[in-house]
Image (tube, rainbow, N blue to C red; front, side, top):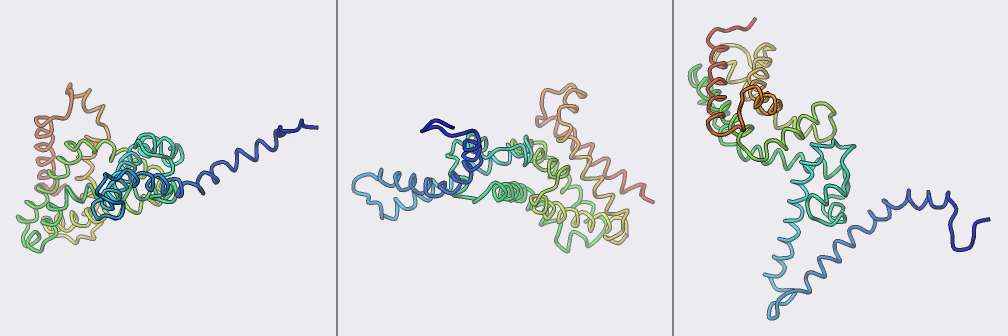
Length: 271
């Protein structure tokens, strides 16, 4: 018989298995309590219900949420969905573990929100070039379509190779290619839309249908010649003897990308 005040091994196992759900159930109230406690630190003369104080509380919550999203993109990209832990994400974000449940509800919801955050950042950067390439005048002639396509490719190259966050984005996206989850649908909507725009431009240059299989494969090829410099980043640096992808290196890559795109379009090396 177990001694009074001590639990048997089976009881201990049950306690461990129920620990996470219990913590999750308390998480929202913990976060809310912390927010309430913070509200008690309002300066004298500016009450808790003042407009400025309420805005400050909201801003702190928004900052925490933003840090969690940035950390989630990084940790999920490195570890994958199954390997990543919410505790590690919270630690990387310098946030309380309870904040994840408070702001997102679950690990799965955080994963999808991280994909939406990533897509939002990319769209904000590539949006102007993509919008220009989607206008009717961009496909008014083969010459206009070619110019729009080359501009779009150079924009993609600059973002993927020049943005500080791009390495984290690439890891997250590549993970979703290898092991698709619900987050893949978010990424596909962005990449699928960009691919469709590219297909219209290539089809206009070549005088083909945008739905032509060869045209669509051509667009993947054009995009792939940029992606390799990010996905195979270490190989490129070692092989080229470069220390980093600085402005000079990126300009060299973009010149080759443009030359290769023109070679495909000029010589019509398509079946």
